[in-house]
Image 1 (spheres, each protein chain N blue to C red):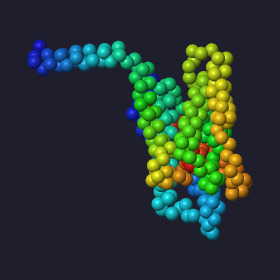
Image 2: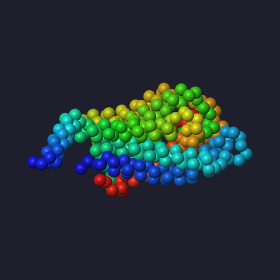
Image 3: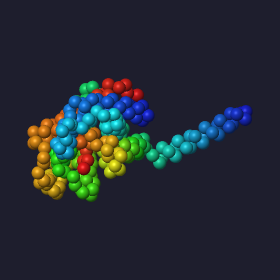
Image 4: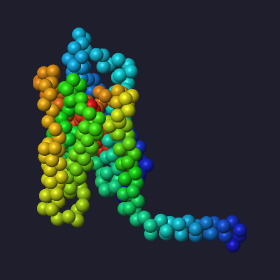
Length: 221
Length: 74
């Protein structure tokens, strides 16, 4: 029996709110301290900026909630269009696929950056990187859906695999060749940058897992 | 047949015709696809506001989230 649209929307909103709250907690412990260190080094401040100051923290919290709800609604739209369900049995592959598509594969070409890394580009460059991020998410998402067989059963398996491998690898390779390399020296220690990239991917994984787990455990109508 | 039952029959017939027209225009799979697509557009709007908007207030509010979740920020 197909999923009821309205109950699905409520479930997606709940998943987004839970994931946004979890994401806010993880960012307090993982990414925010490193962002403060980056800003401190960038502006040569004697003390780190207070990221838990009310105005700034509330902005981060609202943005975390809004982005988690948006991603959750995105996922629900895909589930609804393709008539798919997330259960406890298939939750883990869904978490991995969601994380790969939204966080990991885009980060290969566009790794996480800290404030102060000398990556202040022109506005049009930012716009092109935003389009590139969106393109990478869409292509890897479709590639993973093809690979896992969630999508288009009518295609022959070898063709489906070939298409999915193409969609998962080619855009990253093309973007890697086309995007200009940032050769400006960074005032931040490489260890700090590496740690931030790792923590950003970990935050993405926790966010993905929170969204998928709420989808998996909430009752389906 | 009393007046009420005639009205009900007429309305029921109209509803049936309307349902048939809908069924001919939109198959369940098509209506699912269209609803899903609309939801995707709505979600993309929300994501654009938090992750992509260049409006300074929105950028400042979402700055740490953008860096933390690896959305292109600067």
